[in-house]
Image (cartoon, rainbow, N blue to C red; front, top):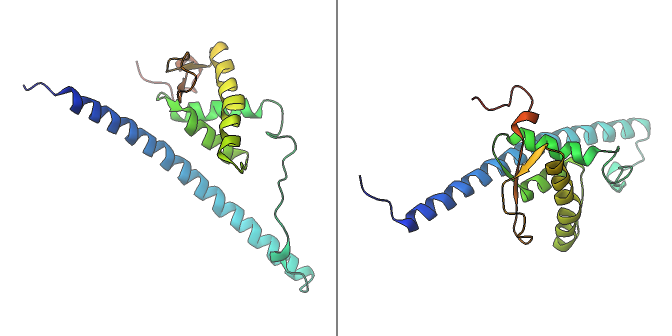
Length: 168
């Protein structure tokens, strides 16, 4: 058997990481397409009712609004959303970026500048992940001393729902 050159091993590992990211992003896209279809159906139903009650009104002239009470809804909702993402990808690890995208979609958060999103990832998402690690519900799969690095995380196997636990 031939020895695989180190540059080819590195390339294969980079490809494997990219393939995992593609899977995670595709899962998010699929979930968002379902939500988009539901929201469009609700919008169409509302427009139909508005026209039935008063055909002089143009529903297209009604401006969209952000309607959440508090940024994440009820107390603990951010933590639960992050745990849900970790458990959905278990036993694999998930990057902070993927977790952030899922949570952003869940709470319909809008960031006007990339710097706002990065600050939110660092202040809200990463801090919550660190608390989950301290509580033993998640584990960091990266060197936490390197703060500029995009980390990866996973749910602790003892805290997974029974249908997701890895076989031993």
